[in-house]
Amino acid sequence: MSARIRLKKMGAKKRPCYRIVVMDSRAPRDGKAIEELGYYHPVETEERQLVLKADKVNEWLQKGATISDTARKLLNRQARTAKV
Image 1: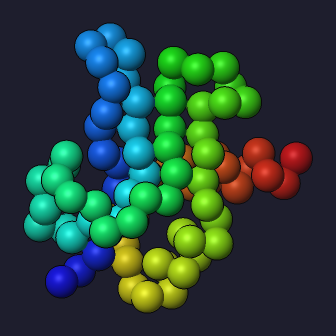
Image 2 (image 1 turned 90 degrees about the vertical axis):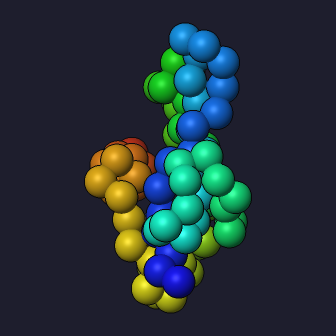
């Protein structure tokens, strides 16, 4: 099994929200997650859009999990705002 950090779509019509999760790379987008690492609400204000558990993300990366392109962009964005 290869673990992958990616987004899981939630929310209502025209009100999307996403959970950042660790899943098996072969699982469907909205399938069962191994662990939830945070969430992303693109409709919210800038401060409330992204919440991540950085320690859990680092733990999964050390275990060999790969990151999807979209999740990587969100992680980089979180890292930039944390430094400011």
